[in-house]
Length: 292
Image: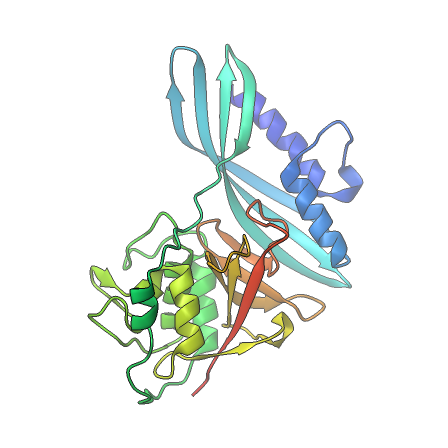
């Protein structure tokens, strides 16, 4: 069983590298990756990957394996080489020793049912400034340290993307405010936290309106962002934002590379066109954190 999965795993790796591709296999993940890279005049010149069994199950007919694959892509773009990484969780099913299914485990997009009461309570109560200097280096260092694991000092959520971004901002010495009102400000304390700390749509709202403490300026283009800035994603284009990333690098064209949780990844191209969550209706918000 594991041997069959290992054989398929090794064959699929060649699908990511142009010179090794075969018409005999179709792997949607590799196809999306190749198409997104081609738009940037970039390519994967080398790939490493390792798999880890997470869970095994068995019933009367099927055997099931859940496993995580850690990909490392060496990407070349206009003379620049950089390493992108991501972790994908998959599930494989076997029937009488034969592999009958192997697919990505699609995690639920964060519930964005933010009530009007919460949105209104996010409005700042006053314009008092909390003086701080955003330490972009510390924010990025934290993003690199914890992109594929979880800091035990904080609660881990099933959809952890915004919790991770908030931790990065806090590591950059952004001040918290609003406790104990969960609908006000941006904060985390022991076993409680604001909506803006953990909910993607709420953090987007907070960054757009905050006039005190952690503040940001919305910009119109991704290339205006620098390290430590934040990108918010509305995959369906319905006005409810469901993902956030932090800028941790730039590619050869000066475009952001980002880190994220939930679908753990680092130095990923900002547009997410290679993601299974991507749709043609996707919308973005670009926030540059104030340094003051």
